[in-house]
Length: 124
Image 1 (tube, rainbow, N blue to C red):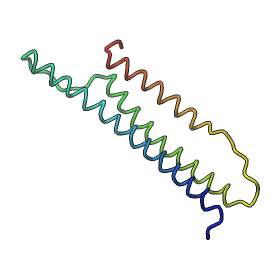
Image 2 (image 1 turned 135 degrees about the vertical axis):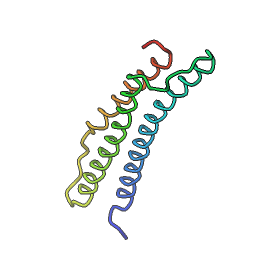
Image 3 (image 1 turned 45 degrees about the vertical axis):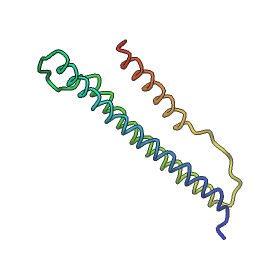
C-alpha cells in the first residue's frame, strides 16, 4: 500500500483539473479568433459586400492572450503538483500555504471574462 495514497490521488486529480482548465482557456482563445471571422463573413453576406476576412486587432490580442494564459495555467498547475508531491513525500508535518498563483490566475480569468462580455455586447 502506498503511504498517503488518498493525498497523492487528490493531488493528481487537482493537477488534472488545472490541465483541463488550461486547455479550456486555450480553446476559448481559438473560439474568439474564429468568431471574429464568422462575424465578418456574416456581415458580408447580409450586406452583399465582400468583406475582407481579416481579424480586428483587439480580437487578435485577446486570442493570443487567452492561449498564453492557458499555457500559464497548465505550467502553474504542474509547479503546484510537483511542490505538493514533494511535501507529501516528506515526513515532516505539512502546512498549508495559500496559493498565490491560483488567486492571480483566477483574477486574470475573471477580468478576461468581463472583457469578453463587454466585447460581445459591443460596448468596447
